[in-house]
Every structure is written in C-alpha cells, then in structure tokens.
Image 1 (tube, rainbow, N blue to C red):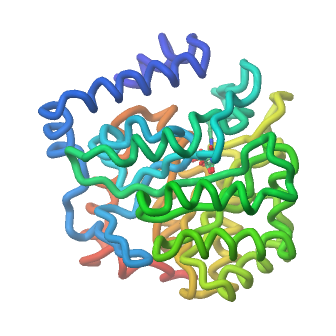
Image 2 (image 1 turned 180 degrees about the vertical axis):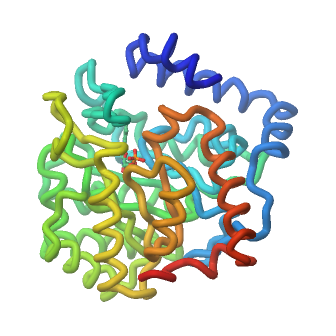
Length: 350
Ligand SMILES: Cc1cc2nc3c(=O)[nH]c(=O)nc-3n(C[C@H](O)[C@H](O)[C@H](O)COP(=O)(O)O)c2cc1C
C-alpha cells in the first residue's frame, strides 16, 4: 500500500514538502490522545524479548529513529506510537537557524538513498526544551542530539554546545554531541582527538548524570575511528553513535552536495561498527546507524556488537509501519533461534 502511495504520489512531490506534510500529520495524531494511545497499543513493541537496557535506560526495542527526522521534538509521541523503541530528536543548536537554501533534500530512488544538505535547520534549544517539557500521553525514550550553531566561530564551539546541553540534558534520556554532519562548515574537524577532548569534557560536565554519546562520520580514517573510541573510553562517555551521512558517492550518480544516507552507506557503517567493537569491546554502548533497511540488517548490527540500532532513510522508502515490521520480525527470529532476549545476541559474532 505504502509502496503505491510512495511511487504514485510522494516521490513526485518535492522531498522536503513531503517531509513537512508527514510531520504535520504526525503532530495531528499527537493532538488526539485516543488515536495516539490506540496506535501505541497496536504498533509499539511489547515483546519482552526485545527489551534492552543501555547506560541505565530501558528501551522497549533496540530499534530507534535516527536524528534529523524530528529536529524540533514536535512529534516524538506519534513516532513512538508507530513502533520506534526510541526517538533521537535534533540536531538542535543553541540558537535557532534556518539552515541552507532549498532545495536541500533529494531522493535517489534507484539507490534507495537520500542526499541532504539541510544545515541544522531548527528552532533552537529553548524551543526544543519547551516541547520536551510537555507531559507525554505515551511512554517514550528520547535522545537529544546537539550541534554547533552555524554563526558561532569554531573557537567558541564548546561554549555553544554546552549552552544547548544545559537546557536539554535534564530533559533527555541520553544526549548526543554531533560532530559529524557534513553540512556545517568545519564541524567535522571537531572530530580530531585534540579538539574533541576539550569539547566533550565541557559538555560532559554540564550534562551531569545524563548519559553522553558522540556521533561520528563514516568518512573518518580507520585510525581516527580507533582514536575516538579510545578517547570515549578514557572520558567515560556512555557510547558512540556510528555513523552519520557520508560525503562519498560510491556507486551513486547524483552530483548534489551534502550527506548521503541509505543503502550505499550500509557497508561502511557496518565496518565502522566492527572497528569500534574491536577497539572498545563492551566498555562503550555502540549505536549503529547507516543503511539499515530490514530485520537482516538489524540482526547483523546486533551480532556485530551494537546494543541499539537506528534508521532514517529506510522509513522514507518503507513507510510508517517500518519499525513495527522490524520489531515483529526481530521477535520472531529470536524465537526461531531459541533466544529469550535480544541481549543474548549482542556482540555474538564480534
Ligand atoms: C534528511 C536527513 C537529515 C538528517 N539530519 C541529521 C541531523 O540533524 N543530525 C544528525 O546527527 N544526523 C542527521 N541525519 C543522519 C541520520 O541520523 C543517520 O545518521 C544517517 O541518515 C544514516 O542512517 P540511514 O542510512 O538509516 O538514513 C540526517 C539524515 C537525513 C536523511
């Protein structure tokens, strides 16, 4: 059904217009508590075998929605009701900003991919804090992903991130420092160990007891992936999210600039996960994201050592029942393998 709607209608509408339409629809659902609760009852993960605990937070399923879809935390309840075990909101910056000029979002249908150069369009940390403070009608696990305000010079980056952390950490189940978006000039340079250490230390101090993670790019050299893993362990971070979008264009014909996500990212994302697991073992919680399309991908990431798995582009191609389907298939597969819990397979092939 969704395939037909997607190919006949949605794929012909400008990608960002379709996105805004979807957000509006989800917000509408969020305003109807009866509908919201009904959807939650039918579609949210309930199978006990799917439950995982990471950095002290309980997740009803290891599969969640990656950052960038609900940038301003406007529809996280509806997204939770559709089956995501957690929703990572953001990227949120300390100051509101419009992002890059449109068009800035492109579907690559034949590659099952997306290129985006949104540039952290968001209403700012104070507005997000207001949304996150609202009482919830369904239980949701919410990660908050923060980034650098574009106009803030790189020398002041730590202060800018800390400002967002101060407002948002108390409202988050976990906090993510995003230093890996290709669409804010200079941002990815913050991944260098000598710059990352002071940045993460100051955010960690402000974050207090909220678990802190860092999100990295797939374009880092292998030695740099190792260096971030080492640094994260030494700093006592809760974990690493790998990966963000790539600036590479392997096997993709589009010349649009921006970050590429979806199927072409799958292999490198898995490679980075394996590298992180090798380096950090179980001293860090690893969150794997990039090119996850179905239960096979989720299963593979869990075996390779991810405690949590996220996706974004897959939902654009598979539709609103994507997370529900993955959860159902995952529970079924666990039963087939005679495993009572998803916890039993994490890192099994690492
Ligand atoms: C349109 C779009 C916007 C995104 N915005 C953000 C963002 O604001 N912050 C972030 O950390 N990642 C962002 N991402 C990256 C995703 O969170 C994810 O890391 C990446 O898309 C790889 O996963 P996927 O292949 O399942 O899409 C964005 C991705 C897309 C497609």
